[in-house]
Image (cartoon, rainbow, N blue to C red; front, side):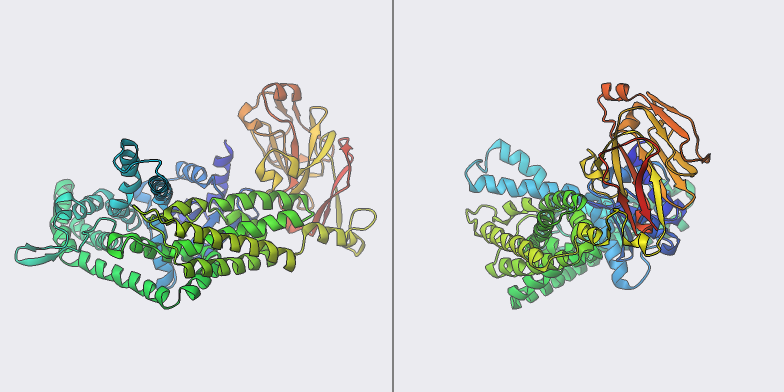
Length: 626
């Protein structure tokens, strides 16, 4: 079983199983569940799971933060369950107030294609940059072909929205798509701005028709779910395959064009107008509020409420210009600035590794590792980043920078701040300066405000014997024996981000000089993989240990491994558990570095090493303070 399969299996179990899931989607870093009963989920165990960064309950959703490989875990989760089947996608909707339900609906509709939209937005921005710099001509084949895919998703956006909205509202996705195709049909677009007549009833088409529109098709699909259900009830089963689609088309098409479409257009114009009025009243204040609070909105899932506003601003009816995204860029990049300061200031090896990687991912718009792994746990760096985002956002908004293409907020957003057909790069310059201000301010404030460095906290507790004051003051000290003989190295030096970041728990790694693994404690084998490469142990004191022999050695499918125990076996300290052929593993191109971690480290006061350079199996190795 691959790592993603194992993660998906654990997550599905801990959210209460398939039976507790109404629906699930994913975004750039999170699995977003709509659960029947959130209290049935084992939230604390999920938070302590080695492959889960954080759990967020907000906006009517149960969000499990996985990281940038979330799409792979999502695929495995669907493969292991019936959640990918249409029959099992019946969502009862988000529980709670109307606001929570609305956030749930918006996020469920937009997240499935957000990656495609972001990619197209970045491409569109770079094409604009290429025209501005004279690298491409507007009539060149290269430009026209690439622009077709970059602009196509926005032109025919109602089709994508129809598909995902139908899935959310549990109605026929293909009927919904047909309805959206009618809205963006070339013959209809050619009549934009005119008035048609349908059996004497006026059909009003906006100046730009329904291309790039958002609200009309979502409202139409919402109504369509009830129309389809009605006809399914009254039409005999033998005739439903033809009669139900026909009836839905005959009812929903005129209803959408005559009533729902105009209402949706007006609602969208009002929503966009309300935001633009606030922005027009005080760009400086709008930028400070959005820049300062954006990461807070993201943490609670509230940022989804702003997505339709940005898209409405970018639609032709909204002028094709958005002022919101430029002011959000400093907020995102400021988290990276604070994380970089933590990297330079911290003396803790694990924190340095985590903060550096988090700072890098923030450049690409992925801030969860920085927020949940670094700045928020340390508190003051998060505050510093929010202050930096507020100042940078205020500068960008005051300078009047605008965005012309939709995408994820990242460094790749900058080319999108050049107006199509224009050589004016002032928006890019202003956004870059504002972002630089945010990064520098977050960096400096993190240094000035400081934070409780993990290594300083540990040093304050340790005594001359390296065990710590907790043990002296009466707390229980549990000493673990080394399961392997070899050279000791810190987890941060292991060539695996999950272990190196400490996400799986505290511990050490051993570079073995023989091929035997022995029991480090008295307890029980809770897990031993069929491949023999990993053993899970629960000690009689409740310590949960993972011994992972080598890196990616699961791919050997058991070759070179021999196990002497099975799941459920009671073990005594010193029992032989596994033998492995280190030479064979190395010859196959795999590392034999073996992490030994306490996976439930958060259940204890601390897990301390004994400052050894090498160790023999059976010697004291780690100390757990209970």
